[in-house]
Amino acid sequence: MPRFVIVALSQTHTELIHHTEEYKIMNAYTENGYASRRDYLDSLAEDFDIDRDTVYMMADLLGPTEDFDGLVTSLEDFDY
Image 1 (cartoon, helix red, strand yellow):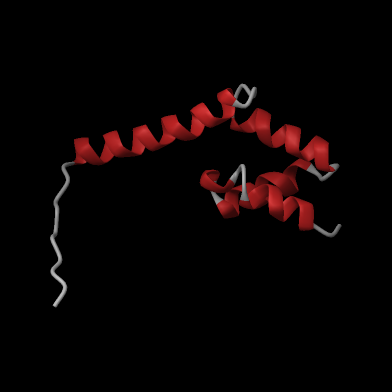
Image 2: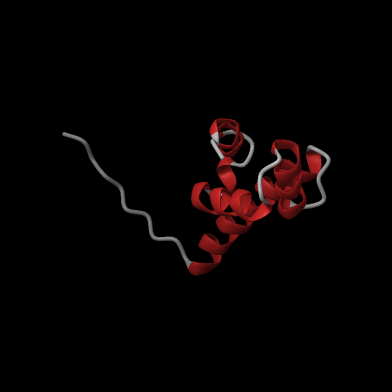
């Protein structure tokens, strides 16, 4: 029978985990030559010749963890 362990995290630990994940994501943009996520999304809009608002909407729906994978695939498949 599987056992489950419930771990309670303090708000400080939860915030630390959140900030660490944000740092990893932001670092991905700078490591790839972009100043920020917005800079990256603007570049995608230009590269794919898709309206910036459409790229922002898709990025918002997919979330930042999909910016370099799922978002690019979605933009490649986008039929406008």
